[in-house]
Image (cartoon, rainbow, N blue to C red; front, side):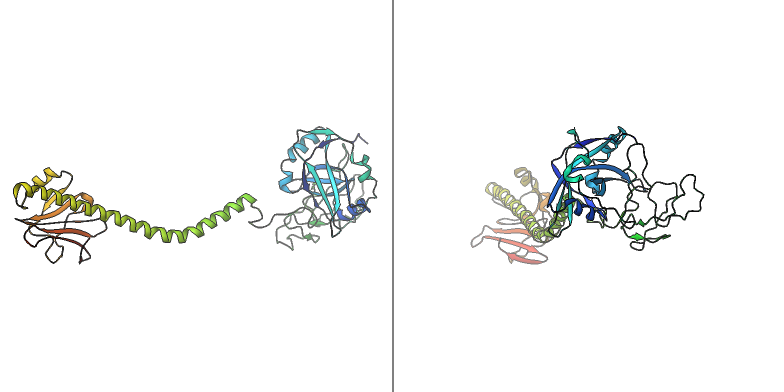
Length: 385
């Protein structure tokens, strides 16, 4: 038999829980004995299923105990592969403890791969290796192809209902051995010759007698945690971001219902304020002309000269009546335009804001006269602004 591979220790600092395979609990219970916990060295090997997906198998005291989850094993696969190519094996500090329910728990201490030291093999650690070993039964046995010493090949695993090939030199008279199989999707036991999984309905693929199928195609139920469902495959950060987005969406609806009308109201107020300011500036220009000409019948060019930023559009008659009604307004405040009409001692000015409201004023300089400010919208006039 060839020399056993040298073990390289992956020094740890982070405890990683191992998913146990069926049949490992009895072995670990006998390993613990009366002790509540024991510490030793576990060996790690890369195995693949029929689809070529790699898994990291954990061996405690020479027996297959379980597998690391896909997340924990992702960074170890290339390291273990490199060590295996160099003829070396990987080890990690393992702690076996008994839970309050009596179920054994295996945790590995793993860390960065740049801190590797040589340690004794698992068989040289008394706390783990001196306990009696449990012989697995045919129903719970998981064959490890990678467990054999260097230079030897382990027994292959086959899917349910596939007969084992006769050993070299056999006469073929020996009855074919059918190995138990399990669904690689849900872990349900597959009856011999099954083409579909009775648990999840997935199609099964039988391995040929010469095909080596590593652990993963014959996992017992619960051997390796399977992430099922859309939520289970999401990381904690993704779930938090999804929940945060949903919260923002839920709260934004009532806030929008409050903010949009408020914004529109403030916008209309700003438009009306601009229209009123335009009317007042037009009044100032007309009053300035009245000081020189003593009449409000002024040509729009003169008013344009006094207030060049206002477009004065002269109307044929008053645009605001004595009763406060505004009519005939065609000038828009957004265009800085006003309608006006003036005679000897009276004049009127109007403009329409973007909100649709007409703002105007009627001024009478005669005895008993005054200013009448009016606003009108949708044909309804109101005195005062």
